[in-house]
Length: 85
Length: 154
Image (cartoon, rainbow over all chains, first blue to last red; front, side, top):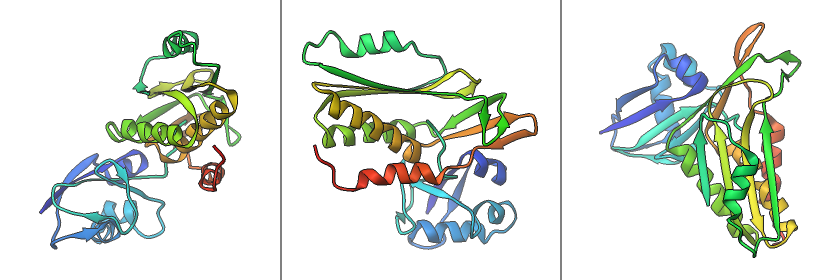
């Protein structure tokens, strides 16, 4: 099951990519589980998404919490705390 | 309700005139204009680049305006937010709220800005003499948004 992941602002620069398709190994997971899986890949993913980084997440264009579920076909975005206005 | 994300500048007078549409039920219009300053955290800012998350931004702003209309007895609200490269003196954001009376219009205008600051997916990157830097979110903005979580009088 595949999801689309987007990165914005500092996270996009840290990751070196704006988006990727990612295959979830399990049936389903939640936002914190997905983040941990991505960070476990090491390299840029660990630097951008590792523990201690201020990261906000949206699922299907809605701000998400760490326990928000993620399923096949979802669009998930990782980004820093917002600074508009 | 109207929400726009655009590169172009906006004309406050023209926007307000178009938004009120000569509705005689409007007795009050509250507005807020956010501007680019030439100094942030003690560092000179030559310009800034604003990026956003297309699709989510419009949804978030529409949600904030809908929330304001639920909470206060206002007639309507307009939000315009610019993206791209901006320089000191440039306008960044416009919020206009129309209502029968000023109290609700003032409160809803402030609420929309406080929520926009903490929930709408925009990010600023500043160009300074020391190089470029991403603007850090402020705890004071979270506190400003949090105070609306307390029970409000309509």
